Length: 118
Image (cartoon, rainbow, N blue to C red; front, top):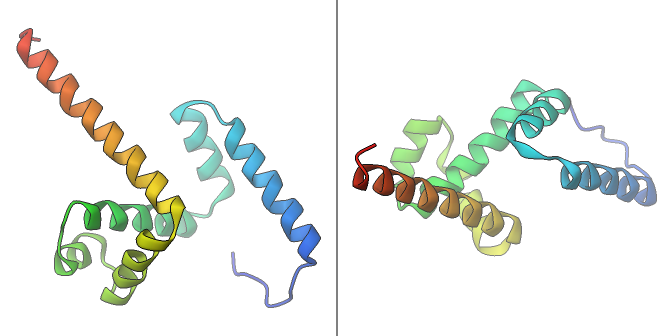
């Protein structure tokens, strides 16, 4: 979906955003998130958002621009833009913290399973 060049009334735009924020707040569990995002986003929009999150993750892990370009097929300019947004945008910080927590839990799950021989 292309963004219209016509400006939306600011109060309607805010109301539409608040509606979206409320829906996201009310989502329960990964399955419902998948259904929601695949239902309301086009495939291109979903891929674009996923690439932005993956870029932030790879930057956080210390991958080079060249490695990220190769993995995600995006430009250095896009990587640079996301690098700047990571520093300035609390949304990226929230996403990265969630990723780190999930990775930590996964790592410990593996250690515990190996300790008990499972």
